[in-house]
Image 1 (cartoon, helix red, strand yellow):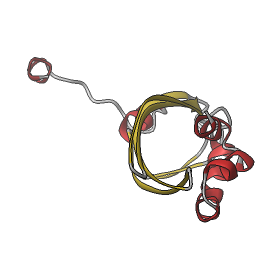
Image 2: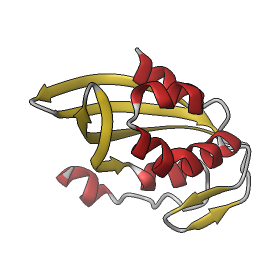
Image 3: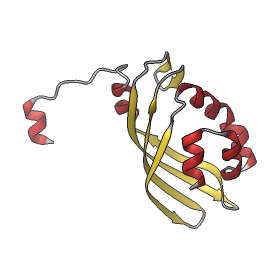
Length: 131
């Protein structure tokens, strides 16, 4: 759908169709930065649940990190690595458009490990047994 297309393209014209004007203003700089950092950004929506004006989305994001990207651990230079990580996002709608991202949870650790920015740690046999 449109939200998935907006996420895939990081296109501000598409974003303007699915976001309120306030959200376009708020998210525009992030979407432009992300488009430069990950031009092939692709979102797969696994599940959506809606109640009233709240929509919860569970999905997977895939792409290739080819440009500078601001992350929780700072701005990363391009790694040229492909990645796939899961996310959960809770949004509030107004008039059928996304008016607020109430909460968003990305698996940043998995993403940063795939980009080889954060090392994966070895799991001991005892930890595996507990898993």
